[in-house]
Length: 383
Length: 245
Image (cartoon, rainbow over all chains, first blue to last red; front, side, top):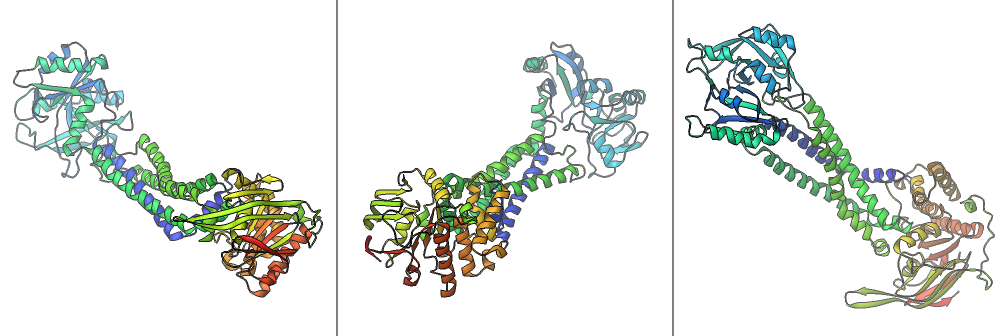
């Protein structure tokens, strides 16, 4: 601590240069935070996917439907604890930009397989008692101001009603919350029986099944057994762990993690060069002063730590401000107002950010610090 | 620092007395530098004894090895051959780390161009050597105040080097050199960048530190007028000490 004023004074030596370096580091960590939140948003569900949940979809594509009758066969199979299904409704509320998912489900089955969906008992009861009833997640309820008792019209170009009317009306009977930070609370769920008897076209079809296995270790075995059971049928299945399913869904827009890592690597490499250059210049300009410090008794190691301390403080100021600003902006919520229903700064990424702050400080300062350490006093004083 | 705060040390004799205790003892010093494949011998078989409390001036033409000799005495460089004993400790064999610690405790350097940190106030510049001690902040500040008082700059504590005249900057440099109360002051052309008046004031100050505070001073200078203040003057030429005034 006693050397802090010395380090701080050196930072004030070229104020503009220090400020610009700090700003560039700040921007890098702001970007890091924001990209982390976007990665979470784009791959939402992967992190919270349960290892003991399997998703069974049509082998050809997720848009191909499966017979509802498969459910009876699957439920009887060994290792299956609970089973539910869902179907993509693809409705539009007022205008296309107001996107949020809607799915018809069986209330009891769905909530049993997804315990992270927290719905008060009285609202569940109301849902079961109201055929046109729907429950909506907190994110979407807050976004559009939905309240229990509201009647919400949703237009579905995919699923018109028998009379050709594309507008469905749902009574909001419940608002659910997520048990975890990563739980997506944007979908609206309504009753499958209402959906099945109202939409135009064939009855008894579902989008996909989700089941919970009795033992996570049995997941692969159960998946293979299901796919084998429906092999060579008119609707063959593809069963996979929920995490892989969500990831595959997210990968439709590319390998998000790889893209993020590539962008961040380039950003941090550039910032490393900027900060490293600042430190190298700073040390070069102070060669004589460093020699004087050594002449009055500062050791080689002491000089090394002095320079490293400087670069670490620059990195810490910029990095912590960047992470803090990112946290504040992310906490303000989804910047797209709907496209990213799960949008937060994951704790593990905050920790990673803090580690990067330290690593950047050390990496940027290490070569100038070694130069300072190896400085020969007599030579430097002669310059 | 107590010595500086309350000058109780006996004034040094103007002439080195045989009976005086030897503080510095250089034996058979050679110093060779390499420039490419060429070897340049800067100091040759040099012997020098400096009694405690002496004010010694080292004169000689440029390139005669004065500053190199001063660097060797101060532990900033190592001889190619020979031994350097200071206060009965052989310093030329100390590790870099021990040598740094030794410098912090035993030597104060005064440079021609002051070499102050431009971003630090006078007080903070003087405090630098004390950062290497175990003193707390309050004690450090007390020692700094005393050192600045000794050099007559108590009123300039919070001024930055750019706000001080050359003579004042050199005084701050001297305060920094004496703040740890070292026994040996090594001055490399301390008046070389100053006008005559300011130079005289600095020489007065060095003389006072020698006579009233018992500091042993070795001063490299080109200026015979400055050398007159010393109790003894040695001339270096082509790496050899060849005349004693």
